[in-house]
Image (cartoon, rainbow, N blue to C red):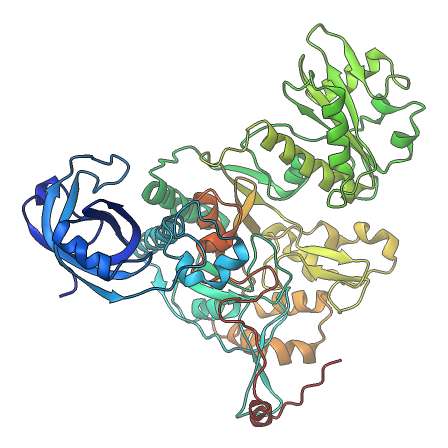
Length: 613
C-alpha cells in the first residue's frame, strides 16, 4: 500500500493515528535539526515533520522539489497552524520515508504564481497540470460534465456515440481529412459536429439523444477556439422551439446550481436577432449593463426602414454628412473625462482592430451644459437633442462613431464592451443569460466567401435548419435566383427567418441550435438555394434525403460549447485554461511537437505523394 490517506484528507480527528501518505514535494524548509516538507497530491497539501534522526538521513539523501515521496508516521496537532489550507491544523510526524522517484529541477515553479511563461508551461504541460490553479479548472470542467449528464439522464436523454471517421460535408468550416489506406485516393473527414448522425438517430426513433463529444474544425485560432473542441450535443424529436428553449434553460440553470451554487430563478430574456443588432451591434450581446446603441443615421440598404434621427445631426459637419451610418452610446458618469482621457479613447478606436478614423464626444455636464468636440458645428440645443436621443443623463458622456455600416456597427459594439469593462460593469462573478431568436435563414454572398462563388445564397446557420413555419411556403414557392444583385434585399429569400436560437451568456454564444428540416422536398429546396444541383445533393447527402422518406419525425436540437461554458464559469477569457492538453495559437501541441512529419513509407502505404509548393 503506497498510501492510507490523501494529502488533503487529515484533520484534528485523525490525531494519534498512524498513516501513510504519498505525493510530490512542494517545498523543503530546514530549521536546525528538524526539516519541514510540504507534500502535495491532487487532493491537497500536508506538512511533514522530520525529526533529528530522520533529518540526518535527509542530509545524506536530500529531498528536492517534485520528488515523489512516501512517508509513514503519526498525525500530530501543529503548534503553528495554517488557516489557509484544510490540513493546516495538523502535521505528520514522520517515522519512516522512502523516495519513490527523484525529479529533475522543474523548468518553472509548480505554484499558482508560477514564473513560467505560456510557451514554457505548454511545453511541459504535464508539470503545469500539477499546479493548483490548473487543477481547479479541470475540477470545474468535470463538475460541469457531471451536472450536465445528470440533468440529461433525469430527462430521458440517451448518450449515444457517433463515428469520428465520416464523409466530408459542407458545414461552414474546413474539414480535417484522414486518408484511407484500404481505399487509396479516398479520405475520411473528422466531424465538425455530429449533425447528420443525430438527425438520423431521430429518424431511428431515439427521441432524446446527447453526447459530450469532440468536434474538429480546421480554422484560424483565437482565445476561444481550438482545432479540437468539445460540445454538449443534444437532439429531441416531436418538439417545437419552445420545448427546446425550456429544456435547455433548465440544463444551464442546473449547471449554475451544481457548479457555482447560483440559484438562477429569473426568466431568461429573449430578443430577436434584429433587436440585438440594432441595440447592441452584435448577435451575442452582453446584457449585464445598458449603454444601448442609438442609430442616428441609418444605411438605407442594410436594415428595414426605421424612424430616422438624421435631422438631429443635419448640418455642416462633413464627417456625419458623408457617413453611411452614425451611431452613439451614452456612457454613464463619464462627463468628467479629461482631454487626455478622450484623446486616449480616440486613439483606441483608431487601432487597426477597431478601424475607425476618429471619435466624437458630447459631455453632459452636471450643471446642465453640454460640451462637445464638434461645438463649432452644432448648437448646445442640438447637442442636448442628440444626447437625449442616446439616453444620456446629466454626468454622462456620449460617444459617437461614423462611417460605413458594418465597420461602424462593429466598432461601436466593441467600444460599448470596452467602456463596460473600464467601468467595472462586466463582472466575472455575475451571470446573465439571453436567448437570441429569429436569425435570417440566408446571407447573400456578394463576394466569394468559401470558394463556392459570388452572387448566391449561403446558409447562415447550416443547411439543415428549418425556416420559421410561416416562411416555409415563401421558400418553396420562390426561386432562389437573384436577377439584380443590387436588389438582393428585395428578394423573398432575404426576409426568410430561421427557426433557430442561440443562448448567450455574458456576451458569449455558449449554445446554438435550430428546429431541423425533416421533409425531403424542403431539404432539397434548401440545398438548391445553396447552389447544389440534384447530382451534388445525392452525392453529399443522399443518405439523409433517403432517410427522410422513411417516416422522419419533426425534430430539433442544440449544441453547447462545453469548453467555452467552462471558461466563463471559471472567470477566464481563454478556453485553453480548461483543456487538459490544448493546442497553441498556431494549432500546435508543443509538448508532443505535433503536427509533425511522417515517414516516407507511410506516404507509400497511403498512395499519397507530397507536393509542397
